[in-house]
Image (cartoon, rainbow, N blue to C red; front, side, top):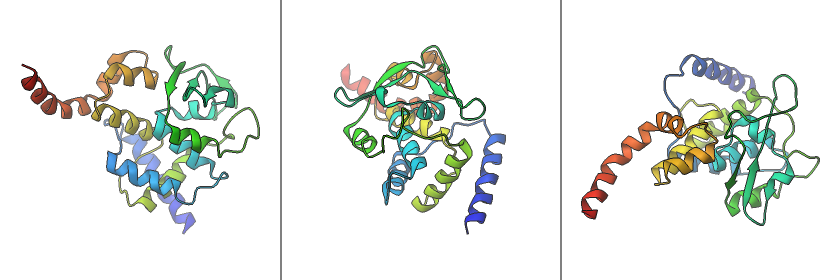
Length: 210
């Protein structure tokens, strides 16, 4: 069964590499289903689940998640300071941020902070070295448990986070800063589909204003 899942996951990754013309993300209902699948039976040793939940709640890139150290978590102010990434492929060392705005401080929920408190403090970093493939495999299994048929990789969790925020009315500039984009125009171009969906709703608000 496991070998079959691994084979399917490898095929999924190849398909997604060939299809980069559209932004893939989960809707809010699918987000909740995946969240439940990841939290169900969660144990401190399930590090790939923690990384996925972290990205779902914050929009952090995979390298940023691995580069997170305990002194970046401010439990009192309910923030996370993102100041570097981690090269999990080659050097196994910390890296500078992907963009000039990659260094940032973001607000996080009590739910996430309580979740992070359950991770054993076994070193400077929150998470051990892991490959993108291993996390994508764990994601594939979680999607299966959640009954979600969409084919996505870890990076889609970041897109999901941003898409949900925009659909809930969070301003574009706020989302752009939270994601660490170099320019707000990148956010606008990437998530134009969400803004288009909101247009009809906002047009009605405009009518009511005037």
